[in-house]
Length: 155
Image 1 (cartoon, one colour):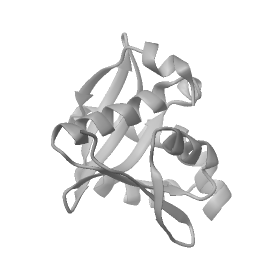
Image 2: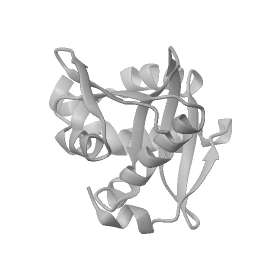
Image 3: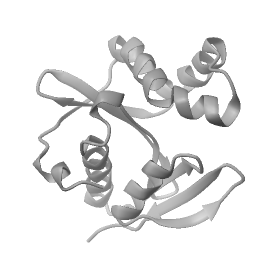
């Protein structure tokens, strides 16, 4: 996506219970437009019901640039691969290389243990799909709403 990703110095830390409210606010800011285009109005009760197991059932890491939190990733496992459930970047930091750097971090983390990286991206989210393709992911399958993408383990 951008050559500026290599120049970005991010700090990564595991999310804690104290981060959950910020993570929900990030989720809303990062996904509300897509959710409304795909499924209709954003409903807080439905999104909270989706968010609670999401944050509780995944390893969540927060990305910071200096003292500013800019985004998060949600990771799980599928067979021997790392499952990248979500990449969320605050809108004001999107298209500036932070998403690319977050994806690179996940792929590096997976490669350290000899694992590939799997993810799904909504068909309406073409910017994200282009990012994943530029980072070496290929389409491994499709559903009515999503592309399943995979990057094999790096040696």
